[in-house]
Image 1: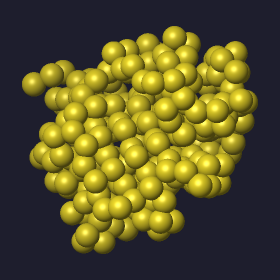
Image 2: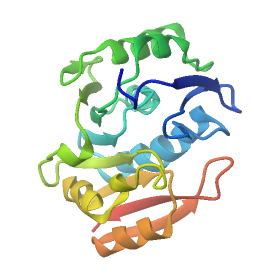
Image 3: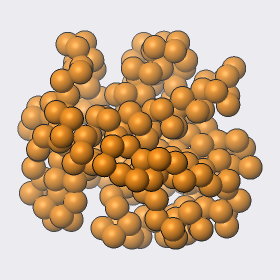
Length: 228
């Protein structure tokens, strides 16, 4: 087993929802203050909903760095259905979690159908696309960000959900940020839980309008940036 996927343990965060802890990196996949509320706040309310407002007559293409537990993808599916908006969701994950861990993940707010969808998302083969009804499709890409090549201007939203800069600094370097900024359409939205000063400076130097927003519970700030 790869060192990046072994020694990963499930735990319950403060809002009652599950996350995972990577003992190799000594890092959790979500905020310990609440996995569910962090994903909703950062990626849905500050990211996807903003894209719905800005691109009100278009299908929305989302690019996620780090499929992880799959929570962001599932919440995006739910939001797409609730708003009757077509969302095409591409997610990178070079180290998918094993099925035994998927079974342990617990999100109390999910109904039975949503839990079934969540399980299917993880069972879906890598590098394949699947339509979850008329409003959502998912493709999980078995790639590292370093190896990913996107068409310029292809996406409306970037969910940058890599492990923290202190744990995976190579993913937060300006060269990697340039790659994801290039993939954004004009007016596109970049969101991440991180609020590092260097991140904000690099995004600004790449032509992005950078906002420091209040963070989810337990975190002072997060970053949202728009492509001019």
